[in-house]
Length: 489
Image 1 (cartoon, rainbow, N blue to C red):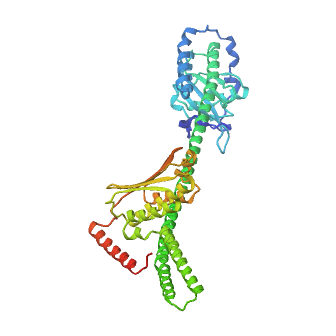
Image 2: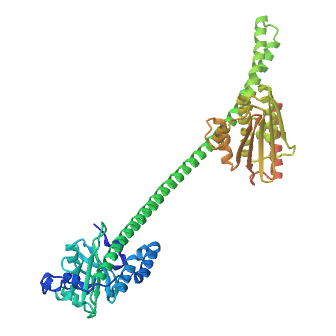
Image 3: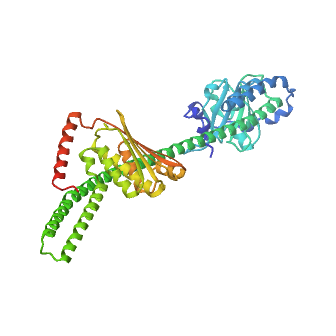
């Protein structure tokens, strides 16, 4: 059912002036004594004054275009002007949640404009009669029958009521005459009939506007809800990615520590055992009582031990070059690159400043692993015969560039790598190391080769010059001592 509160939110409430006398036992007189619709035919006919109507119609058209919600009040002001009425109003049927239907004066203009919002009985009122008969009705002194009208401050001499047509809300438009000698005629009926049509149209327009506004509000609410859900999902995914990144970073750190530990175990413990075994073989070969077969076997074992020692040394350096911890990035990188060039048969060019100095341990490890993974990818995929590595530092950043002259990387693959969707563990590890340290990771590739550039920020974690000198001397002394004892082949 039509909700009158949607169209007239400002006229809700109780208005006792019109509502106190709505009981059936207060009805007086006969309806036929006040109903004079049949007299309209006998009254003199006025000719339409089209010139007079032109101005109001232009006003109505302008209001319809600019402010549709003001149409009802504009129509009532035009009714007052064109029909010489004292009061004009619109009454709409309203059914309370509990109780009988009533007619509410939703819009009123003229003498009784202060009565806007008042209610009359649906089944006992001039408007109710017009709605029941579905036709215009003319009343003379309607208060003789509808006694509650005596409560309004001025008498109603005549009342012309016309029902609203169409599929919109049920209601009427009406005009009152408050002065003797002012009677409504057929010209007033014509004007009011046209205004009734306009009123029905106005209410349909308002309903459409309300429906559009409600739909727009619902759409905005739904968009806001979906946006909030999407933002929550994005935030959750971001937290998950951050957690995954932290876990990946921690796993990389643990892997580095484990590789460092295994490398030292191989270099120190296993290497020392191999040196001791080699020394025992040398003593055994010095014995003259050995048979030729035994001497040959021991000699071959000595060669095998030397080969095993070299293999272990290579594995140890691949896991973690000892020079990286002992004397820094530049020496550790040079040692690794010499071994890589020998194993891969590639030409390797390495550029780094002679006074490059030390970096924080995690930064040196990250740079070494980035170069290590980059060279592995070059060797496996690029088909290049040459690779160049350049490491440069400034006051606030250190950068490493790895360039090859291979077949290049497809653009789609580069997008996947930079977006973190690359399937290779090496590239994902490189990207995660860079992310953990707050750096940047870029790849530029053509059919003539590929350049991978990584930039990592520097902070104040590096040792001071004096402390670095002490650390360097202590580590170098330990390294020299271990070499003199035959622990490093």
